[in-house]
Length: 377
Image 1 (spheres, helix red, strand yellow):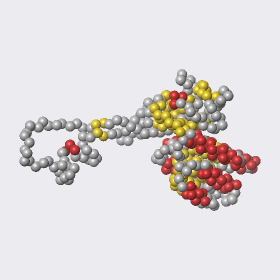
Image 2: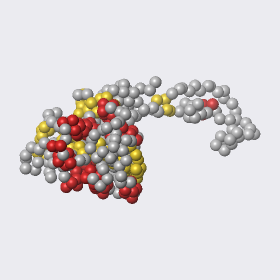
Image 3: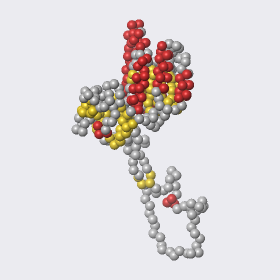
Image 4: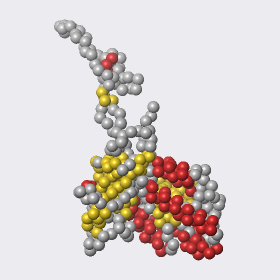
């Protein structure tokens, strides 16, 4: 579908980056004046340090305590750079391509930032599939058990051969069933272990924080795909602490809510507290997804799954990567809120219309912010 850009506000934003600064030369060198002498043709040649290990090395070339030559340039990083992955979706969840760099505006704590880097394109992914597998909802050969396995296998089949995949299942605690690899037989063997659930607990908060910390230092495009009811029963971390940790880790979460149809059928038999628990679970998954730049889906029928998997793939891969150096370079460890907008040359909100000229509602998917580094004393 072709898209034409006119003028509308679009929101949301995010991510973290690295640092760099030019060389800082330390130390100075004083050269003593030497008396002019006549070379002695019969004198022995000076030892060559490169050939003679016993040759005397001039003090100015001796390594310092860090093992580096004295008087040489040293380098340190001091400039914070932030990278923002942004997906722009139409009203059907399809990515909108070919938006030029000048149409994007990033606000950090409501202060406009200058975009210095811009990249578009599909890239290999590093994905962790996190599966809730507790006896509370996935009873052996029950409807929840079948739905969980079908969703897990179905998503794995949509991945590309170059994508790295790990599988983590959780009940009372997270368990790594297979580590990151491109070999899909490892993932298949991991899912084969999802046979009989052991515990009734489902500690979602602890598992998401554990997974995010494990993936935090992985380079490149990465994401967590969560198959869960969204209910947390016994985590050590509270929702607020888990939420802050998930924001700090900066891994997009794509959440797929399980048991939606079962909940609808059992609605008349559930009490108000049970209904409230499930509503809270949905809101928690939406919060984790939106604040990390991911998306949340709540399918009611099995036939919705292929479309959801396709939407997840599109959102993860077809993104605009924006880079900027924030005007606030303070290393204070504070959380900074981000917002991404599409604007015209005059700075007014850009309106997006379809090929028939009808305005369409556009969603910008990006992280809500990032945590600035803290100065190390």
